[in-house]
Image 1: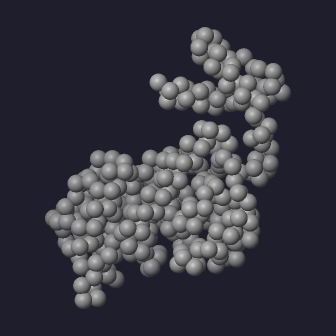
Image 2: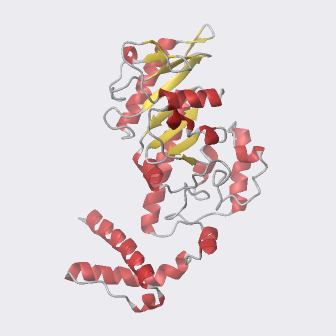
Image 3: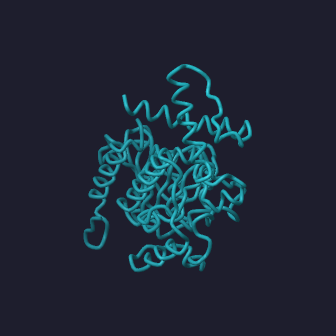
Length: 324
């Protein structure tokens, strides 16, 4: 971050915002003119990206300045309608200086599926992001849309916007952007791991060890403030209950404890069915015939069997496509 005489060097900030825009575009986080970026210059001025301009091709002169009510005070191009989301975050969290909103594909897939982000799988994610919320869907560009994040932003810097994308908040432009990069990389790893088989989790005790590291790194974790670091960390979310009526439910990434609560077979119990079905599906695909239930699957209901067939078929087809 650039300073001049104790103040932000606005031109350097404009150049940095354009560079962040190029990273967002190059990463595939914002197609065409998607996404928006902001930085709070002072108590009532926010530098932001304009509407209908690709983040990969912005120039410093393209950027706008708005006040905290969203009124544009300078800039040749019109500010984005979604700046209201950024301003609502900044008004709710005075410590936030920068916000990045875009549509990173792997994280957005979780947002479209309303699939909560699983925890207790990777230490880097736990330390640098921690809890991630999913805010309910609302029409973008409206104050109602911006207000969907209010219940969550006080407790996290990273929010999935249902059926839309992500929004990340930080102390500066790079901090806000890196959180977007981390959540998409993590979601990509989860999706790849899920294709190989059930996701494996480390224990609540190990999760608590990671959370307790964060203050020494200068990273806030609201679970420490609420005294939750020794609670049921892996299977439950801070955002699961008590914030809004919107409660995303896990389907693809069930923790073993959640599987037990829902009466779902544990991954190990499915291994024999899965292995037998892989063989059956491969034979059916090769011979053009129908898939019949192998012996290990005989104890499954028709509905369970069909769901298992669909899951295995998707995995087999993905593997066949990758081998060509």
